[in-house]
Amino acid sequence: MSVPTRRFGRGLLGPLVALVVLGAACSGGGGSEDSASTEPVAPTTTVPPTTAPAPSYRSVVATAQVPEVAVFAEPGAADTTYRLANPTETGGPLVFLVDEQLPDGWINVLLPVRPNGTTGWVRAEDVELATNDFRVTVELDAHRITLTRGEEVLVQEPVGVGRGDAPTPGGRFYIKELLQPPEPGSVYGPYAYGLSGFSNVLESFNGGDGVIGIHGNNDPSSIGGDVSSGCIRLHNDVITRMVEEIGIPLGTPVEVVA
Image 1: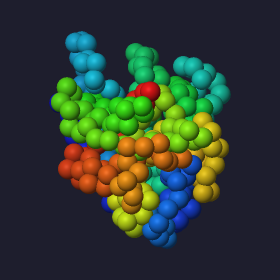
Image 2: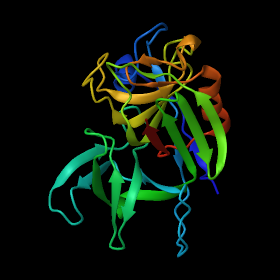
Image 3: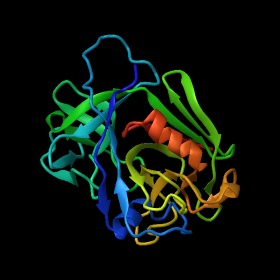
Image 4: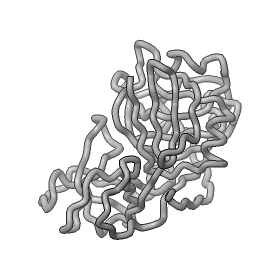
């Protein structure tokens, strides 16, 4: 069963905020970037108790329920390693992909920080858990993205990925936010998913901190090649379908493989 979703109201953001989210992984291009609006999509159903093993495709998403989530290096640690604001700087909810749950109220999560793959422990009381049957796989050599829900393939389409000097990093990430650029004809297309991962080559780009994204594009000929500064480019009709028809929840796992 897929996770129910809800759509949050759109709020205008300054141009710097939009670039912070999309910077580094996404090359510059045409279109105005005077403002951007966010439309996070978050799971809302808590995880039901069960003794049955979860299907391999099912993940668990933690959505922050407090203004600031304290992150610890290990359960019960005295000092925090991070304190992450909720809502995020783009106005959407702070979400995590869950790695492990302990019965004593601690949850190990994948964090949207450098270096890629960083995890930490959060208190169960600070988050709400939900199951998620969506999953995204990006194959770099094949230039292909596949979106599944359970065992059903919903989308399988060509993509553009990072150039040789700014490759798209491989690894396990998750969708942390959804942005709607102010100009759908810009280099970002009509929508952009911000991922929890960062470029391994570029520390900053266009005023941003190197976040990797999945987004549309104003140059269809670039799809299928090594063309970006690390972002994953889709045809505009594909990203629009993923957002408007399918409604991928925040926290959805994204596996980037060779």
